[in-house]
Figure 1 (cartoon, rainbow, N blue to C red):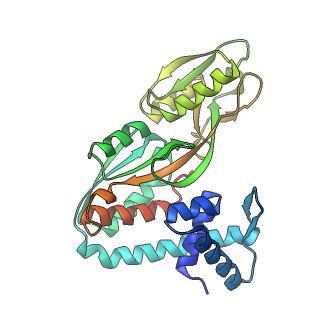
Figure 2: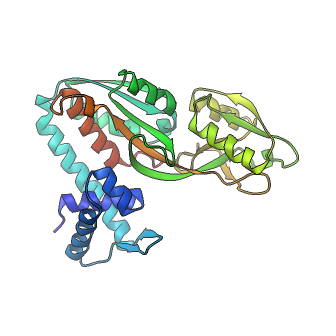
Figure 3: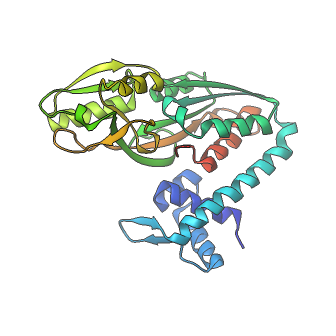
Length: 290
């Protein structure tokens, strides 16, 4: 009843929030993706997506189907990986931004290493801007990172808003400059926070800079200031504050995957390993908190 091709298109639409973005990410035409979803709805005998010209949302049955799709495609990917494991040797240099430290990324990587023991996986954790530069310089093979909306890099796999997070809302006193806890440049969250505050005419000051998420969280836990994170990656113990007086709404960011497969033969170990890990990351939904 459930065609894996149709399930992948449906899952891409659900995660990207639009047929256009899903088609772009899958490398298919929008009409093809629409047909896949329509056929899946026909096979299920249920409407899975409510859509109009401006909005797309999953029905209750669509939410259920999304869970089934993730589980079924994960099994299929593991089966493919299992039978290809003996053929796959080499090294994969993978970079992930700091935000994913508290996500399900570790579980996905654990599964990848177990299914592909002959692949030497090297992991770099850094800011998104740093990872992009390393990829351009040939120091990484695959990158999982963030980008601001409208930027051309990578394959978008998820989109969500940034939020202000702090130990208590009291820290955002409108009468005083907002104390910011931030990654150093070229941090995307830092730039988004400063741009939003400047547009709103809100005074601010940097009270803590750290290259690690654990460092930022420690400062926020101590009540030193406010940090910015994707909503699903808000550190435990911190609360979402704003938007409100003197605390403007923040933009959305996209999570993207980018690799160097276009620079390598498609059957090279690095390119094949990058494709397998990419699919595992997309199916695993690593942007959701554990």
